[in-house]
Image 1 (tube, rainbow, N blue to C red):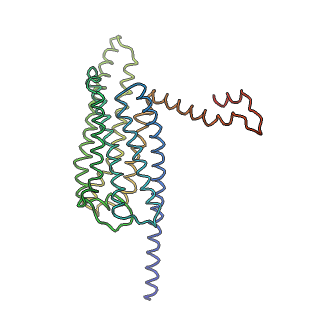
Image 2: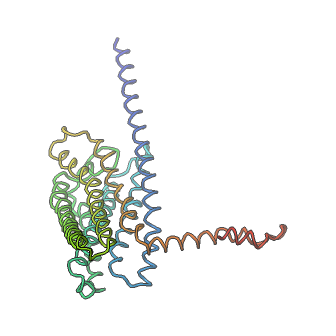
Image 3: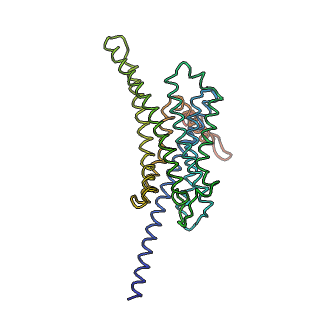
Length: 340
Protein backbone atom coordinates (compact mmCIF):
# COMPACT_ATOMS: atom_id res chain seq x y z
CA UNK A 1 0.00 0.00 0.00
CA UNK A 2 2.82 2.35 0.87
CA UNK A 3 4.50 1.57 -2.46
CA UNK A 4 1.28 2.32 -4.34
CA UNK A 5 0.90 5.62 -2.48
CA UNK A 6 4.49 6.52 -3.33
CA UNK A 7 3.94 5.69 -7.00
CA UNK A 8 0.70 7.69 -7.03
CA UNK A 9 2.42 10.67 -5.39
CA UNK A 10 5.28 10.50 -7.88
CA UNK A 11 2.84 10.38 -10.79
CA UNK A 12 0.91 13.36 -9.42
CA UNK A 13 4.10 15.37 -9.00
CA UNK A 14 5.15 14.47 -12.54
CA UNK A 15 1.79 15.64 -13.91
CA UNK A 16 2.04 18.93 -12.02
CA UNK A 17 5.61 19.55 -13.17
CA UNK A 18 4.74 18.57 -16.73
CA UNK A 19 1.76 20.93 -16.85
CA UNK A 20 3.91 23.73 -15.39
CA UNK A 21 6.57 23.08 -18.02
CA UNK A 22 3.98 23.18 -20.81
CA UNK A 23 2.54 26.44 -19.45
CA UNK A 24 6.01 27.95 -19.16
CA UNK A 25 6.79 26.98 -22.76
CA UNK A 26 3.54 28.54 -23.96
CA UNK A 27 4.24 31.77 -22.07
CA UNK A 28 7.79 31.82 -23.45
CA UNK A 29 6.51 31.40 -27.01
CA UNK A 30 3.98 34.21 -26.52
CA UNK A 31 6.65 36.48 -25.04
CA UNK A 32 9.04 35.72 -27.91
CA UNK A 33 6.35 36.47 -30.51
CA UNK A 34 5.32 39.68 -28.71
CA UNK A 35 8.93 40.85 -28.38
CA UNK A 36 9.54 40.19 -32.10
CA UNK A 37 6.44 42.20 -33.04
CA UNK A 38 7.49 45.06 -30.75
CA UNK A 39 10.93 45.20 -32.36
CA UNK A 40 9.50 44.92 -35.88
CA UNK A 41 7.05 47.76 -35.21
CA UNK A 42 9.39 50.19 -33.43
CA UNK A 43 12.76 49.82 -35.17
CA UNK A 44 11.52 51.05 -38.62
CA UNK A 45 9.68 53.92 -36.90
CA UNK A 46 12.86 54.92 -35.06
CA UNK A 47 14.87 54.90 -38.31
CA UNK A 48 12.25 56.95 -40.17
CA UNK A 49 11.84 59.47 -37.34
CA UNK A 50 15.60 59.89 -37.05
CA UNK A 51 15.86 60.69 -40.76
CA UNK A 52 12.86 63.02 -40.62
CA UNK A 53 14.23 64.91 -37.59
CA UNK A 54 17.59 65.25 -39.35
CA UNK A 55 15.87 66.83 -42.37
CA UNK A 56 13.19 68.96 -40.71
CA UNK A 57 14.75 69.71 -37.31
CA UNK A 58 11.43 69.10 -35.54
CA UNK A 59 11.97 69.06 -31.78
CA UNK A 60 8.59 67.59 -30.86
CA UNK A 61 9.34 64.43 -32.83
CA UNK A 62 12.41 63.85 -30.64
CA UNK A 63 10.09 62.72 -27.85
CA UNK A 64 8.24 60.35 -30.22
CA UNK A 65 11.62 59.01 -31.38
CA UNK A 66 12.62 58.45 -27.76
CA UNK A 67 9.34 56.57 -27.23
CA UNK A 68 10.11 54.29 -30.19
CA UNK A 69 13.62 53.61 -28.86
CA UNK A 70 12.30 52.87 -25.37
CA UNK A 71 9.68 50.47 -26.76
CA UNK A 72 12.32 48.77 -28.90
CA UNK A 73 14.39 48.33 -25.75
CA UNK A 74 11.33 46.78 -24.08
CA UNK A 75 11.12 44.23 -26.89
CA UNK A 76 14.84 43.46 -26.64
CA UNK A 77 14.80 42.92 -22.88
CA UNK A 78 11.58 40.89 -22.96
CA UNK A 79 13.23 38.55 -25.46
CA UNK A 80 15.64 37.56 -22.67
CA UNK A 81 12.71 36.76 -20.39
CA UNK A 82 11.21 34.64 -23.17
CA UNK A 83 14.46 32.69 -23.47
CA UNK A 84 14.37 32.10 -19.72
CA UNK A 85 10.83 30.73 -20.00
CA UNK A 86 11.72 28.44 -22.89
CA UNK A 87 15.01 27.13 -21.43
CA UNK A 88 13.56 25.29 -18.45
CA UNK A 89 16.75 23.42 -17.68
CA UNK A 90 18.72 26.65 -17.19
CA UNK A 91 18.74 27.95 -13.63
CA UNK A 92 20.00 31.55 -13.58
CA UNK A 93 21.84 32.90 -10.56
CA UNK A 94 20.36 35.50 -8.23
CA UNK A 95 22.61 38.31 -9.49
CA UNK A 96 21.92 37.50 -13.14
CA UNK A 97 18.18 37.40 -12.49
CA UNK A 98 18.22 40.75 -10.66
CA UNK A 99 20.23 42.33 -13.47
CA UNK A 100 17.85 41.00 -16.11
CA UNK A 101 14.75 42.27 -14.33
CA UNK A 102 16.49 45.62 -13.76
CA UNK A 103 16.86 46.02 -17.54
CA UNK A 104 13.19 45.08 -18.04
CA UNK A 105 12.05 47.52 -15.35
CA UNK A 106 14.20 50.34 -16.73
CA UNK A 107 12.95 49.89 -20.28
CA UNK A 108 9.29 49.76 -19.18
CA UNK A 109 9.82 52.85 -17.01
CA UNK A 110 11.45 54.65 -19.95
CA UNK A 111 8.49 53.78 -22.17
CA UNK A 112 5.94 55.06 -19.64
CA UNK A 113 7.94 58.23 -18.95
CA UNK A 114 8.28 58.82 -22.70
CA UNK A 115 4.49 58.73 -22.99
CA UNK A 116 4.28 61.36 -20.25
CA UNK A 117 6.88 63.49 -22.03
CA UNK A 118 4.99 63.28 -25.33
CA UNK A 119 1.81 64.30 -23.50
CA UNK A 120 3.57 67.27 -21.89
CA UNK A 121 4.95 68.35 -25.25
CA UNK A 122 1.55 68.23 -26.94
CA UNK A 123 -0.13 69.96 -24.02
CA UNK A 124 2.42 72.77 -24.17
CA UNK A 125 1.94 73.10 -27.94
CA UNK A 126 -1.82 73.49 -27.45
CA UNK A 127 -1.72 75.75 -24.39
CA UNK A 128 1.18 77.94 -25.58
CA UNK A 129 1.12 77.75 -29.39
CA UNK A 130 2.85 81.12 -29.91
CA UNK A 131 5.58 80.51 -27.34
CA UNK A 132 6.13 76.79 -28.03
CA UNK A 133 9.15 77.22 -30.32
CA UNK A 134 10.78 79.61 -27.87
CA UNK A 135 10.22 77.28 -24.91
CA UNK A 136 11.24 74.00 -26.58
CA UNK A 137 14.88 74.68 -27.35
CA UNK A 138 17.43 71.99 -28.18
CA UNK A 139 19.00 72.33 -24.75
CA UNK A 140 15.69 71.81 -22.94
CA UNK A 141 14.74 68.88 -25.13
CA UNK A 142 18.12 67.27 -24.48
CA UNK A 143 17.86 67.85 -20.73
CA UNK A 144 14.38 66.31 -20.68
CA UNK A 145 15.58 63.20 -22.50
CA UNK A 146 18.70 62.81 -20.34
CA UNK A 147 16.65 63.27 -17.18
CA UNK A 148 14.11 60.71 -18.38
CA UNK A 149 16.72 57.99 -18.90
CA UNK A 150 18.44 58.82 -15.61
CA UNK A 151 15.15 58.40 -13.75
CA UNK A 152 14.36 55.16 -15.62
CA UNK A 153 17.84 53.74 -14.90
CA UNK A 154 17.56 54.72 -11.23
CA UNK A 155 14.18 53.05 -10.89
CA UNK A 156 15.35 49.84 -12.55
CA UNK A 157 18.89 49.45 -11.21
CA UNK A 158 18.38 50.68 -7.65
CA UNK A 159 17.95 47.09 -6.34
CA UNK A 160 21.20 46.14 -8.08
CA UNK A 161 23.20 48.68 -6.07
CA UNK A 162 21.12 48.44 -2.88
CA UNK A 163 21.02 44.74 -1.90
CA UNK A 164 18.38 45.25 0.78
CA UNK A 165 15.86 45.89 -2.01
CA UNK A 166 16.55 42.39 -3.33
CA UNK A 167 14.62 39.30 -2.35
CA UNK A 168 16.36 35.95 -2.01
CA UNK A 169 14.22 33.39 -3.77
CA UNK A 170 14.78 29.78 -4.75
CA UNK A 171 12.12 29.94 -7.44
CA UNK A 172 13.71 28.90 -10.71
CA UNK A 173 12.07 31.55 -12.92
CA UNK A 174 13.08 35.20 -13.06
CA UNK A 175 10.21 37.55 -12.23
CA UNK A 176 9.57 40.86 -10.52
CA UNK A 177 8.08 39.30 -7.41
CA UNK A 178 10.87 36.75 -6.98
CA UNK A 179 13.85 39.14 -7.02
CA UNK A 180 12.52 42.51 -5.73
CA UNK A 181 11.35 43.23 -2.21
CA UNK A 182 7.58 43.83 -1.97
CA UNK A 183 8.16 47.10 -0.09
CA UNK A 184 10.32 48.41 -2.94
CA UNK A 185 7.74 47.46 -5.57
CA UNK A 186 4.88 48.95 -3.54
CA UNK A 187 6.81 52.22 -3.20
CA UNK A 188 7.60 52.17 -6.91
CA UNK A 189 3.96 51.65 -7.88
CA UNK A 190 2.43 54.15 -5.44
CA UNK A 191 4.96 56.95 -5.91
CA UNK A 192 5.95 56.21 -9.50
CA UNK A 193 3.30 54.74 -11.74
CA UNK A 194 0.09 56.09 -10.22
CA UNK A 195 1.27 59.75 -10.16
CA UNK A 196 2.45 59.30 -13.76
CA UNK A 197 -0.94 57.85 -14.71
CA UNK A 198 -2.80 60.76 -13.07
CA UNK A 199 -0.54 63.27 -14.85
CA UNK A 200 -1.12 61.49 -18.16
CA UNK A 201 -4.89 61.55 -17.64
CA UNK A 202 -4.86 65.21 -16.57
CA UNK A 203 -2.87 66.35 -19.61
CA UNK A 204 -4.93 64.50 -22.18
CA UNK A 205 -8.24 65.30 -20.46
CA UNK A 206 -7.29 68.96 -20.55
CA UNK A 207 -6.50 68.63 -24.28
CA UNK A 208 -9.82 66.84 -24.71
CA UNK A 209 -11.54 69.74 -22.96
CA UNK A 210 -9.88 72.24 -25.29
CA UNK A 211 -10.92 70.25 -28.36
CA UNK A 212 -14.47 69.99 -27.01
CA UNK A 213 -14.66 73.75 -26.49
CA UNK A 214 -13.41 74.27 -30.05
CA UNK A 215 -16.07 71.92 -31.41
CA UNK A 216 -18.86 73.68 -29.51
CA UNK A 217 -17.65 77.09 -30.66
CA UNK A 218 -17.41 76.00 -34.28
CA UNK A 219 -20.86 74.41 -34.16
CA UNK A 220 -22.32 77.68 -32.91
CA UNK A 221 -20.60 79.59 -35.69
CA UNK A 222 -21.75 77.03 -38.26
CA UNK A 223 -25.34 77.60 -37.23
CA UNK A 224 -24.85 81.20 -38.27
CA UNK A 225 -23.49 80.00 -41.64
CA UNK A 226 -20.06 81.56 -41.27
CA UNK A 227 -17.74 78.60 -40.84
CA UNK A 228 -16.89 75.66 -43.11
CA UNK A 229 -17.34 72.15 -41.65
CA UNK A 230 -13.83 70.65 -42.16
CA UNK A 231 -12.47 72.35 -39.02
CA UNK A 232 -15.17 70.80 -36.87
CA UNK A 233 -14.43 67.42 -38.40
CA UNK A 234 -10.75 67.88 -37.56
CA UNK A 235 -11.52 68.72 -33.93
CA UNK A 236 -13.83 65.72 -33.61
CA UNK A 237 -11.02 63.53 -34.95
CA UNK A 238 -8.66 65.05 -32.37
CA UNK A 239 -11.14 64.25 -29.60
CA UNK A 240 -11.37 60.63 -30.73
CA UNK A 241 -7.58 60.38 -30.94
CA UNK A 242 -7.14 61.70 -27.40
CA UNK A 243 -9.80 59.30 -26.09
CA UNK A 244 -8.06 56.37 -27.79
CA UNK A 245 -4.67 57.35 -26.32
CA UNK A 246 -6.11 57.57 -22.81
CA UNK A 247 -8.02 54.30 -23.15
CA UNK A 248 -5.11 52.28 -24.56
CA UNK A 249 -2.58 53.41 -21.96
CA UNK A 250 -4.98 52.92 -19.05
CA UNK A 251 -6.26 49.54 -20.24
CA UNK A 252 -2.72 48.29 -20.89
CA UNK A 253 -0.91 49.11 -17.65
CA UNK A 254 -3.52 49.82 -14.97
CA UNK A 255 -4.68 46.16 -14.50
CA UNK A 256 -1.10 44.96 -13.99
CA UNK A 257 -0.20 47.61 -11.42
CA UNK A 258 -3.49 47.30 -9.56
CA UNK A 259 -3.11 43.52 -9.41
CA UNK A 260 0.51 43.91 -8.31
CA UNK A 261 -0.50 46.11 -5.39
CA UNK A 262 -3.16 43.58 -4.39
CA UNK A 263 -0.66 40.73 -4.63
CA UNK A 264 1.91 42.58 -2.53
CA UNK A 265 -0.60 43.41 0.20
CA UNK A 266 -2.40 40.04 0.11
CA UNK A 267 -0.49 37.27 -1.65
CA UNK A 268 -3.32 34.75 -1.28
CA UNK A 269 -5.99 37.06 -2.73
CA UNK A 270 -4.78 36.85 -6.33
CA UNK A 271 -3.25 33.98 -8.32
CA UNK A 272 0.43 34.55 -8.97
CA UNK A 273 0.37 33.43 -12.59
CA UNK A 274 -2.56 35.69 -13.45
CA UNK A 275 -0.38 38.71 -12.88
CA UNK A 276 2.89 37.37 -14.28
CA UNK A 277 1.58 35.50 -17.31
CA UNK A 278 -1.43 37.54 -18.43
CA UNK A 279 -1.67 41.06 -17.03
CA UNK A 280 2.02 41.76 -17.63
CA UNK A 281 1.59 40.69 -21.26
CA UNK A 282 -1.23 43.21 -21.51
CA UNK A 283 1.11 45.93 -20.30
CA UNK A 284 3.80 44.91 -22.76
CA UNK A 285 1.23 45.16 -25.53
CA UNK A 286 1.29 48.92 -24.98
CA UNK A 287 4.77 49.00 -26.52
CA UNK A 288 3.26 47.39 -29.62
CA UNK A 289 0.39 49.89 -29.75
CA UNK A 290 2.55 52.99 -29.26
CA UNK A 291 4.04 53.12 -32.78
CA UNK A 292 0.57 52.61 -34.23
CA UNK A 293 -0.92 55.42 -32.13
CA UNK A 294 1.90 57.96 -32.15
CA UNK A 295 3.80 57.41 -35.42
CA UNK A 296 2.10 55.43 -38.17
CA UNK A 297 -0.89 57.78 -38.43
CA UNK A 298 1.34 60.78 -39.28
CA UNK A 299 1.54 61.50 -42.99
CA UNK A 300 5.25 62.32 -42.89
CA UNK A 301 6.02 59.02 -41.19
CA UNK A 302 3.81 57.13 -43.65
CA UNK A 303 5.61 58.77 -46.57
CA UNK A 304 9.05 57.99 -45.14
CA UNK A 305 8.05 54.39 -44.45
CA UNK A 306 6.82 53.99 -48.03
CA UNK A 307 10.12 55.42 -49.28
CA UNK A 308 12.06 53.02 -47.05
CA UNK A 309 9.95 50.07 -48.24
CA UNK A 310 10.46 51.09 -51.87
CA UNK A 311 14.23 51.35 -51.36
CA UNK A 312 14.36 47.89 -49.77
CA UNK A 313 12.21 46.51 -52.59
CA UNK A 314 14.54 47.92 -55.25
CA UNK A 315 17.59 46.56 -53.44
CA UNK A 316 16.05 43.08 -53.14
CA UNK A 317 14.85 42.99 -56.75
CA UNK A 318 17.99 44.49 -58.27
CA UNK A 319 19.93 41.17 -58.40
CA UNK A 320 17.00 39.61 -60.25
CA UNK A 321 17.28 42.27 -62.95
CA UNK A 322 21.05 41.82 -63.46
CA UNK A 323 22.12 39.16 -65.99
CA UNK A 324 24.26 36.30 -64.73
CA UNK A 325 27.19 34.68 -66.44
CA UNK A 326 25.33 31.64 -67.73
CA UNK A 327 21.85 33.15 -68.03
CA UNK A 328 20.28 35.46 -70.53
CA UNK A 329 19.65 39.06 -69.61
CA UNK A 330 16.14 39.81 -68.45
CA UNK A 331 14.15 42.24 -70.61
CA UNK A 332 14.22 45.81 -69.43
CA UNK A 333 10.42 45.94 -69.39
CA UNK A 334 10.15 43.20 -66.80
CA UNK A 335 12.65 44.94 -64.54
CA UNK A 336 10.71 48.14 -64.67
CA UNK A 337 7.53 46.26 -63.91
CA UNK A 338 9.16 44.60 -60.92
CA UNK A 339 10.45 47.92 -59.63
CA UNK A 340 6.99 49.51 -60.00
